[in-house]
Image (cartoon, rainbow, N blue to C red; front, side, top):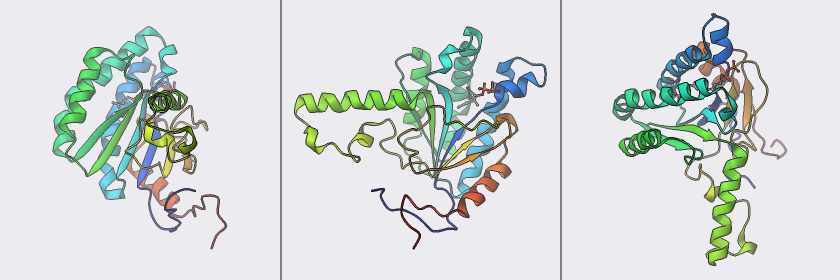
Length: 243
Ligand code: FPP
């Protein structure tokens, strides 16, 4: 059974997760290379993070790079990695001073050493913060996360720390990358595509979804606010019958 179902119709989402899609098309529409769109998209991240406290969003999780994104051209992948390094270097001080706690989820094994070092530092520098918990999914895939969690769980079984008969719905989430986070209340995908693309598969079992036609570099705090209001008007049932 899901824990603590919140069916209050007016409550805004506490945890919002966003699939930031449409950077490439935004750039192409302007006759510019795809990376131009990713840079514009990165600037939108700041506006959205800044809007969170006002909107009552305590947890924001953003999909920055998927386990499938390695299939893009070498130029685009290298450009994105360089963008992540620059973004972290540039934003660490502001994030720290503004009460944002940053975490990364995903498999770090394939990421370069310089980037993972910057990620570790940013996590460490902001670990005392509690205003907004920003989680960046980087080399993240929901299936990959469940597979890695299962491997860790199996190791505990092999070590005798865990009995197979004790494995239930509460056990697996403790091995996921998101183990310290609540499940997302609202998942937003921009750019008019209605797919979840391997994002937070386990965690979004009871999430509400909003699909926006806006390309990510055009997404604004005002649109986020509108989507949060629309969420507040919904009744979440978690499989139950309304009271
Ligand atoms: C999807 O658009 C976007 C990505 C794969 C990258 C998301 C990255 C950012 C917004 C950059 C900044 C992030 C951080 C954390 C600094 P797409 O390229 O698939 O667009 P398309 O569908 O129009 O081709």
